[in-house]
Amino acid sequence: MSATQQAPVSRPARADERVAAVGLWRRLLVKPELGSLIGAVVILAFFSVQSSVFRSLGGVANWLDVASTLGIMAVAVALLMIGGHFDLSAGVMTGTTALTVGIVATQLDQNIWVAIAVSLVLALAIGFLNGWLVTRTGLPSFIITLGTFLMLQGLNLGLTKLFTGTVIVRGIADAPGYHSAELLLASTISVFGQPFRVAVVWWLLATAVASWVLLRTRFGNWVFATGGDEVASRNVGVPAARTTITLFMTTAAAAWLVGSITAVRLTSVQANTGTGQELIYIVAAVIGGCLLTGGFGSAIGAALGALVFGMTQQGIVYLNWDADWFYFFLGAMLLLAVLSNRLVRRYAEAARR
Amino acid sequence: MSTAAGDRPDAPLLELRGIGKDFGSVIALDDISTTVRAGQVTCVLGDNGAGKSTLIKVLSGVHKPTRGELLLDGQPVSFGAPREALDAGVATVFQDLAMIPLMAIWRNFFLGSEPTTGWGPFRRFDSATAKEVTRRELSAMGIDIRDPDQPVGTLSGGERQSVAIARAVHFGARVLILDEPTSALGVKQAGVVLRYIAQARDRGLGVVFITHNPHHAHPVGDRFLLLNRGRSMGDFAKGELSREQLTGMMAGGDELTELAEELERPSGR
Image (cartoon, rainbow over all chains, first blue to last red; front, top):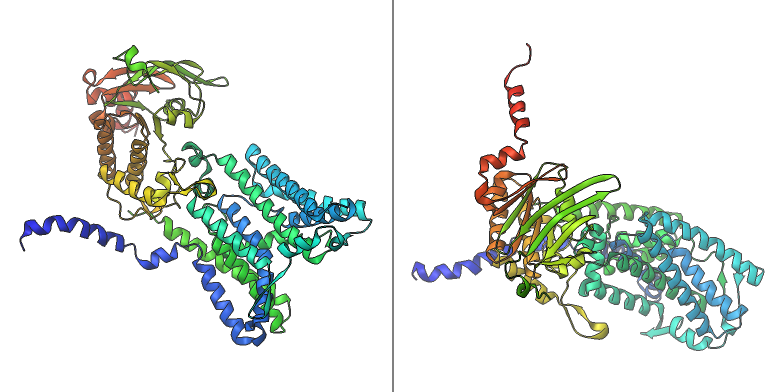
């Protein structure tokens, strides 16, 4: 071989070598869902070894059920967090939407589908209001949604009392159209003879759609950009305000789905439903690799975060431990997740000198 | 669409006529005039607070000028938003680069102008094309990146500038405005960026190069607009000004002489 023949070959060879230098380990590390995947596997292994009920099909159906409604919300909240915002009203909104379904169906004597539609319109309006206020004022979403959170909490109680005279809406099962709604939102699907809640399917669907939108569409690119640096993204023509408002409306729509599932499944709704859940959603999203500062995270990670949550909650019950330990575990996992996310971010951002 | 070439064949790409901008009672810019021609570099020089940033924001559509006229191909234009300036072919590479450090290079490259494929609800970001074009455009500018998937945050300052310039060139910019592209860079990195500026110029773009460093401006510039406290200290063609004169004017001439005298003598002791 002469040197002149080798020369043109050496260029692509050199380029390939430099690509390989990035390394599999580093590529894996910058994947936001890695931490939650490891966490989920470890927790699954731990409880499966300790408890036979946990690893039985019935046990799996049980903790998947806990994870499902939480997961639908966690995925939407993760998108919002990647977009750089929080929604503290997300938890109470699941109550607002469930109560709306109940009150419209039982107190105003409407078909349940009409009630569900009214609930959706209301949810989208609240989401729009949140997003519009945040984008118009430039105030932290934390404080704006804290305001809507408290307002909704008051409205949930006040309106429920006004309509029913109690703090509970009952008798949703008697509404016309209930059976078709139950089929879609609250039925079970049998797998190997074990009934699984249909909410699990909604959860998987929400995760798949959210992940696809985030990674494969223009809108997804805008979400990352708006959360990463809003001013910079506006400067290159990203409609940042529209993106933010859409994200708040998406979170509200997820709350509507969970609220409708809750109302149809339980057939009665307490006025305090959902209050306090908003922090759990954020915890699941953070365990799933979302940075609190925005611009980084994953829908699949958030779904795994919800799974970690569901498994821990049920696992502690199956092991007959005191339920108080659950919060200790949750807090420890959150801290661990935040610390590892910080490392990942530093690693990803480490400038080459 | 521009029909101006027929109206005035010698019209510069971009022309500023007596541009001024007030913020309340503060006159940030007053009576600024210069021209930007295709295949030439117009340097805007000035110290901190001279009004360079305000001028960029007027040119890029962030602010509307209070006074004066902006002409594109000889036609008066008014940009209400950065998007409008971009659509007219005036692209700005901001000091903070408008790049998101945690996002991959190819995602940043197409941010705000993502190519799509598919139809209806299945319309998606054409990532294969985006990656391919990013790699091709960067190598056309002589930029050697290892992997378009790596986050922009892992690039060095010079590389980031280069990606931002390549992005502007790819999206059909005819006028490229660079806001202090060399200010935060070492000597070697600054040289790399100056080379890309020359590249862009040779591809027929009109370049507006904003800097406070006459040593960076002089070798690459064809025209020099000097700003001081929001006013123009003069608009010179390359032949009219030596590097020493440019440096002297930038430093404030007499002020520098005074400063030199003051520093030379040990005072009083």
